[in-house]
Image 1: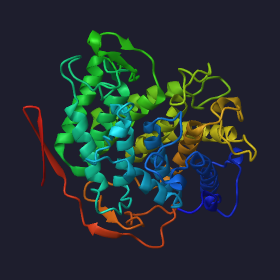
Image 2: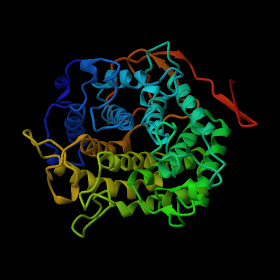
Image 3: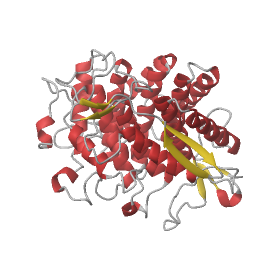
Image 4: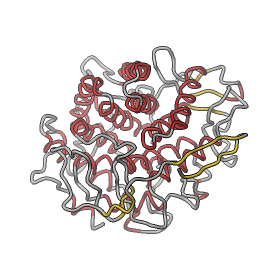
Length: 450
């Protein structure tokens, strides 16, 4: 990739984020371009180009947030049609696959949890579902990598406490959270299972998605009103639920349910669950009467106690709400209403710095709050570019997903008029990737190719 400055203007006219016109796709794309540039200004890995800096962001950002950011940039490429960052995204994703191509890298053993691995899986699945090119023949296709991740996660399902569930942490070397089972890790496995079911038509993934959902409900991570709570201690058999709620947990389960609604051809059970989760997500909007439908992280934002991780959470709710509307059109009206108001507020919040384009944290203050950061850029980017999702090509499914080599993406079925098409298409090196069948025998995972 050339200097990031070369992509500062996607369109012919620069539009300040605070002047965002949500009714004009060109305005949305211009503002998204500006905020994407600001997001990528935190990244230097493609310049230093060393194994320790490629794909990751400087302290205090953990490895998981880098995986999340590449997902945001995949969204940016897909929704705006601007491929300026595609080479950087590709390099970043492929650099982290690990020796077994499953995002289990010993370099991050001190911090990698099940939720961290899940966020990298979300990005890999985005690449899969958009036929994003994977040019390195020494590394498996995106879909196979996603399945590899899933294979490692299900082996860590723990029936010895709480009747099942994933713990937060993976490695004993990271004792912080080894006895905690959390919604993000289990919601991650739920969503990954749902998306793999849709991508492969392999019913094993569906069964696991149903299993994780049923366990999450039975243990109390999801209540009768579809609020998603943070987790519980396995040392206490998950009897006492931590009632903290975070926006990204709500979004993760919501999109997994929407995927299953789509995969099951509109099953009412999954429609009701998706609608319930969407309705419950309203608790993350409108902190004050004069901020109707403006998103906020309710646990910490109004008290200025959000940590670095939490400042990015809103973006994932935006991402998964928009994707939910793609797969369950009946949700479009409510999703668009909430995200539109939030996008306008986010644009106004991106009015700081010397160039009046740096994004702040609190969107409900009506401008820049003086609190910049990578997470603040990501949340604004995800929310504003999400407005383009409603006219974009939905995620591809089994029979449409292909392994694509080369630099340019394969042609998408019925490409939307609002997204720029590339001048050329990639070389399709395999017509359709063969699904993997998974058989569980005495807790041993056996994998083969159909």
